[in-house]
Image 1 (cartoon, rainbow, N blue to C red):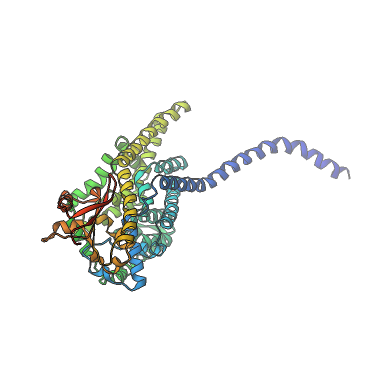
Image 2 (cartoon, helix red, strand yellow):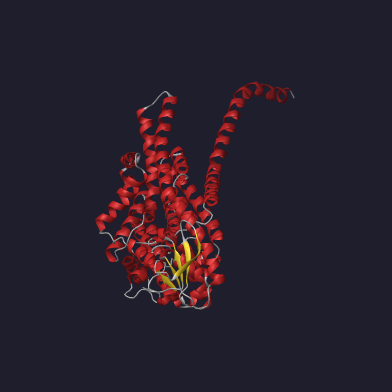
Length: 500
């Protein structure tokens, strides 16, 4: 009895003084761990809120021509209409988006899905950055992505390059975690948006060690996108290679010429990353890239290095086979990738250059990140003034103008519209899906031997691809055969009055 009574009493003084601090330490650690677990969810919500805020600023931007083209492809497929097989040019069908977004038939619903995809990308940037560079760099890179106007624009328009980027980074993240089958499946989905990502599958052949065989077999999975894409082309366009004529027709209508391969590299790496986006902070990206690779030469075969570069290689191969006119949005995945290295380069340089005091390090990092924010915000202001605001007003007018056409246009009457609004016409005017020739594309009419005399003219000068198109439409309206129905500074709708 004495032993049983005194043993607990003797144990208490020895254990309690040591247990109390230990209990406090795990509590703080568990709180920090819980915060880290919740951080991806918080970043997802933050990116989602940012997308909704942009939609509030630009409510008509979701009426993107490519998105409406997917709606038209789907509606024609369901209705058994094959009229698009004979048009000289239309938006190239992206199989995944035609069958994913097409059934929605509502830009607002498509935007809701795209906003979720953009929020997932913001989370992926954090997760990849945390694994490669540390939690601080991953968090800052994800937050910096909130300021990227191109990502916001692609999200509003449910653009193909947004979905390609999401699936590409999902593939990178899975590959970094040695989940090669999942990574290959993500690449397959990306290839169903654009087949240019297929060279990224070569990464799996560089994997060494015990996972080599599994990774090598995974490289075959993305090839499934090829027959699926060809089958989609056959169903939607009547030909396995029906998109070839679209590339040729667009190059003929555009004032821009296809680029040679070296020039395409310059556009993707120099103009896109340095001159247009990271004007004052691009050197930090190269510093970050060099510092990360210098720590471990094996990182040269990391999916974080190889997959973005192989994507660029896919565009180069496409340009060699079929020269095309590039847009900056094609190379947005490289911009997101380089952004992470810009952030890492800044943080890593300060960590080595300034070891103490902590306040000086913090202030230096804040100044460098302010330069990065200035680059991104300055780009947004240029884009907003030069394109986003005028195009938003023009799209708002155009949507209302097609409502007027639906009410007042007589059966069989033709409508002239810029190429950019050709999908709008086929989506809004039901009979034109069966008879797309009723929509006269301004760029095609301007190059035709005999000028067209359409019954209606949708005049949106900013949307014309080249000056000669505007000259042709101006001369048409100056002939005295048309009167103004409704107009705004950015656009106008005219109807023919001399017997049309």
